Every structure is written in C-alpha cells, then in structure tokens.
Amino acid sequence: MIYISDKAREQVGKLKADAGLDDGYFLRVGVVGGGCSGLSYKLDFDNEAQPNDQVFEDNGVKLVTDLKSFLYLCDTTLDFSDGLNGKGFHFSNPNASRSCGCGESFAV
View: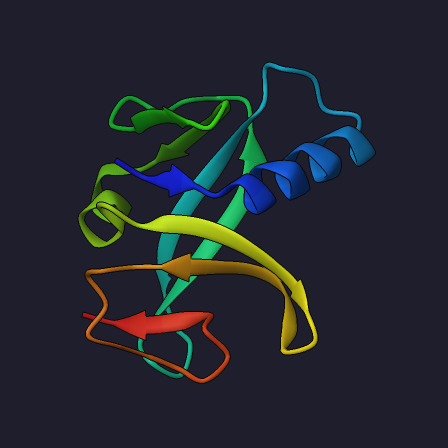
C-alpha cells in the first residue's frame, strides 16, 4: 500500500484543479534511477493505467505505481510541507536505508 497524508491530499487536489484535470486522472508515483543517493521519486498526473500497475486508494486519492517502483515504495507515505524548512512533497519511506539532505532521492 502507498499512503497519502491530509496535507498532500489537499495539495494534490489543488494542483489537479489548477491544471483543469477531471476525476479520470490519478496520481502516478514512481521511482527512477538518479539523484545523489541513487534513486529518485517521480510524481505526475496520468489517466491511462498500464497492465502491471498497482492501484491504491488512500484518503480519497487514487495512487498508481508500476510494479518495479512498488517494490521500493511499499508502505511509503506521501506528505506535503509548506514550512520554512522547505515547501514541497516529501516521502516517508521505511524501505530507504538512507536519503539525501533534500529528501528527493534515496537508497535501499
């Protein structure tokens, strides 16, 4: 399962509305190679599911990830911070053995 906090849900809703996307769109969460720790998170809106996608719904948000990314994202929570220490989406990933200072990349 992939989880989403209340703050992240609110921000996803705002971004979706600002982009004029309808309810057919979902949040695609993925992992790609790169970043200072080796792996980076990727977020995007999508409206086409792929055959091996893993589909979850948490806190009223449909989250979709490919099977390979799910291996790294299992039990991860997507959060959003708008504080003085940085604004943006953050991942609380129990599978990560280390992450970089900016929180945008990790290693397992």
